[in-house]
Length: 303
Length: 210
Image (cartoon, rainbow over all chains, first blue to last red; front, side, top):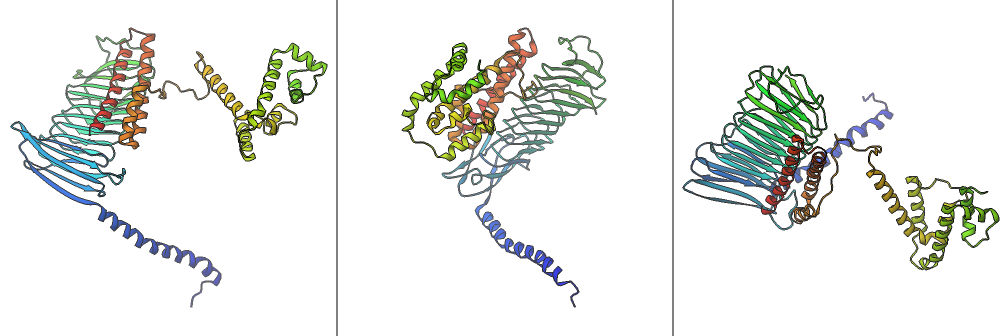
């Protein structure tokens, strides 16, 4: 016998049953929507045989591009079209110096940002020169060994585990993450995005952001030249005690703050201005570091 | 002798064609501000009948206008009867309110602009050097933005924001170089700032070419 009082049944049961009914009622439309979306999306794959170190260019108007290392002398491009309002053109050309593969999305009449979206995954051979561009969706690449150029408007950029070659990144407001990048020339510029670098070193590392923050977490290694510049964004560097570099930090209108044990520099063209700049040396000054901002704050700290 | 406030309270009667009393006449002759106000009001009174022929908005519009002015702090919530604002809000003057409102708005903007541009002026919420300035766009920038929006309207705002940021950097660097021409850091800033703007342009051109 049900011992639940009648009033409780009247109050509680509808609360338990109603959500189930509503949920069950929602399952079917959601499933149908998912099926129709999946039907609208088209997945395709194209393979290009090529010589060593091909040039691969992928230009996408909307949607992410992810580039990974492949095997052999082959470029594989997998992509998902989000509707029939967008198409993908591919082309392979080249001469005796090498192959050039271009992939480009074209939105068709009546396409919107959503329907014109194409999601790319690209596999490239070792040493490939890669250019990727998109206005939305993350642009990412990992473990590549050739030159890489990445460009996006509000697009986040995520580059990891790269070695050799040159990296160039440009965004308007997309954040830039560079991680585990060794012995690579790096040039990264953004206007409104933040730049985060973790374990990045190379003979030349130059990054700038207008009003985004710049964060460097590494050892300024590789006997390189490091230039971190901003307009109003803060610059923050976290360095191990074993690092070897000389540093010049200047903020024209903002403040500088150093808690890294630096030695005085014997010769410097910058005359330190208390609170606005500092110079100094750590270890044997293997690398040179310039931190400069117009009105942001600079902080150098020991990790 | 009447104060300016007392004089203003009696203004509606005077401008409506009422007779001056001795105190009013004395005040009007001795106070340039009030006599000028009377002249202006009389001029408006003469023009008002012509404006009355125009389509008059519904009473709700006037009520909303009154509420907006109260909210802006331009008039008090419950003005006393017979005060200057009641005079303006009387049905007779309503047709003149729109051009008058526009004039008042222009004056407020002008005064605000003048006070902002005064050296050493520090208003509430004045941006500090730490917060990026909102910089103006020049003709080239506008042309570039028009080009962007003709191709991809959704990107216009992104490009516009970033052009403004680049321009703000240029302006900051220019100001500093003007103050300290020998400041190498400021020179370098100016170069960086122009490079940033060049980058925005290059990206826009690259976008168009794709």
